[in-house]
Image (tube, rainbow, N blue to C red):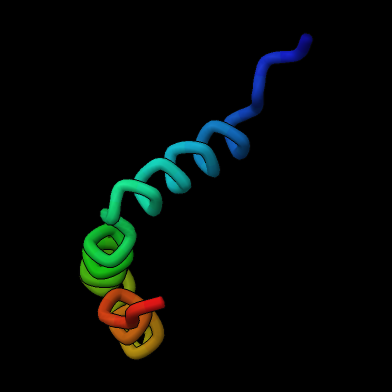
Amino acid sequence: MAHPGPAARLFARLQQWADAGWSNSVVFTWGLLQGLVFPGVADLFFLPLAIARP
């Protein structure tokens, strides 16, 4: 049995956050942090996703 790669571990962690109800906060924070590094249009994409309800 092979060990999961970094992408699989990242996906599993993101799935845990989504199942725990943290997805909105994570996407919102990621959008803000990305805006600090690369200011511009990225926030227009990420912020609506952070406040959207499924």
